[in-house]
Length: 308
Image (cartoon, rainbow, N blue to C red; front, side, top):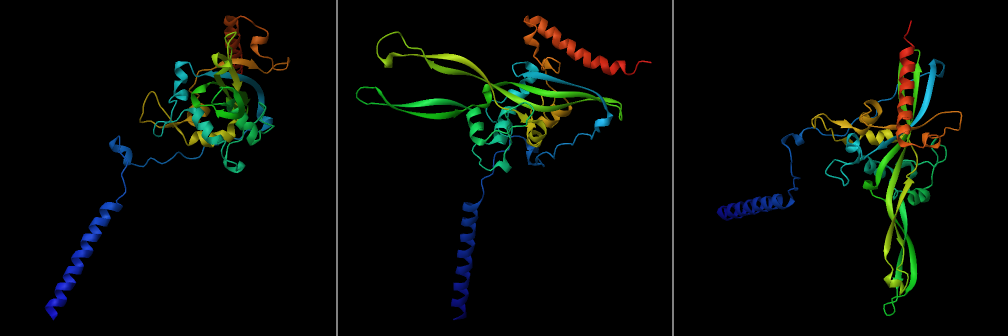
């Protein structure tokens, strides 16, 4: 009797062991492929943005506001444009901004605000943001027999990150006499969307089915974003470092502190209502010279402070 009990107990242990082995094989999580051997190291997100130094208004003895344009077609600005599609952890600056705005999120507290003016005083509603970041189109419903349009449904097609080809930034240069330094701080950024809008040009006769589609280049603003509100999102996104891939750098580090981008001044604060350079200089070459003159004026002010 004891032998029978021992045999039954042994069989039960063997069955449990096989069941555990099969279960462990089925429940084992799928490991994601590792591209580099050091990716299993600590690769958590960046820290919070570094707060700028507090400056008292009484210590600012000089300041000048300028507007710049960052053209992503320039080679130095390519790290902000590519990749046009998210590739692993890499994102473009435009995709980072789109993800922060999150037009599908109705909770205002968990998305980035977009403003209607460059001074960021009038915040856009969610419907206005969707209309700004999407192209209005019409979906036509046709009669299957005659081919005539019997119904048209309007809809919005969201813009993609590769359609943002430039940014306009508003920044202020000021001299802090308490620390005796000349500093610059970005105040706001404005994505510029460039796309080709399809228009029905027709062929001059025949049925509407014979009409062809043409293209009209459109340039429009993507809204204004307060820089300090955008910085936490930029700090969490790693940017491609063209000099050394091992040196991690975020968009916030590259733009706020290192200023690793090429820009051209197109507007400065002036008595004529902050008019743009192109409003009083028509030649493109002279406009570039005027932009450099404004840059030189700001640099010379700091240099002349130390003359004795």
